[in-house]
Length: 380
Image 1 (cartoon, rainbow, N blue to C red):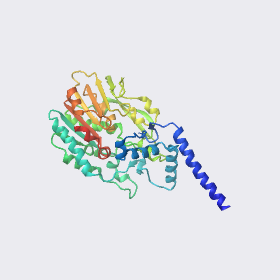
Image 2: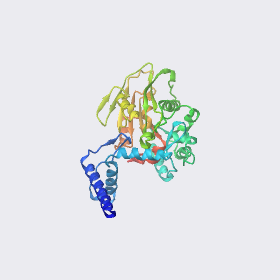
Image 3: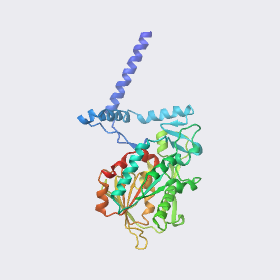
Image 4: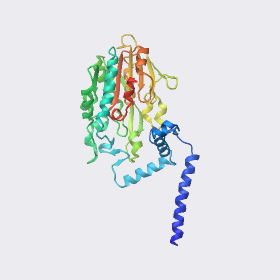
């Protein structure tokens, strides 16, 4: 009887492995995961260099993990089980006070941060004729560490921002997000379930940049503020799959005297007549309502009158925190070029020269900056 049970157990195990392998090969492989809000690993490229550097093995492992059959359902089951155990952390996301979710932020590698900062400094030194501003925004865990669960580890983003500011040379103007967000900490400047700031947080960033540039910023009374979604469950919810959360709302600030803006997306060779894409409000990634999501290179052109133009051109080198800020900037600059350095692989120096751009805004959040080496591409 015991042998029969063991035999059935072995057969069941082997059968499960066989079915998983079969499903892995016959089920279509997704390029993008709506649940995790990210692009999945593509098929590994077999080449001698990749084999010798172990890159092929790493890509193969990620490919199998990302396309494991019914992965989304397994992620949900794991999250549900951990919540049943009253666990406050899942997949690097903490469930904090006041309905906020937070991404773990531990002490970063300061050697790498100094390399990234030096790359920006070198880029500024190579282009002394260009006015450059670097804005660094904390994420919600940086502004609200007191809302974390008891004993949850957290490293000070304020300390990281100060380190970066101390290592920025005089060729750049540094704007620390803490300086213009701290006094508004009691206001809804971050989404509870997403890693981005709200449109109000983006508005505060716009006002801070306008003040640094000497522009006359628009007041909130100059906008019609509308709620376009009451059902936003963002990236932190996607990763953690915590249930019972109150969805966020998404607002849009529409100028009371609208001016047309044309948005050309170089990646897809598309020209859009709006900076907002309502189709994303029916999807998981609702934040992509702003600018239609992530693109390597875009150009926004606005028909400003001569009295409204603060400067002719601006290049924004950014992560996705800039997406809800850029629409405000179009009220002052008729031609805005936008590069997401994480995906753009051309020469930024050549792009500056070719388009005769004399003003650059770097806009990043602290968490993205310390965890991504893309700034090293500035001087390639």
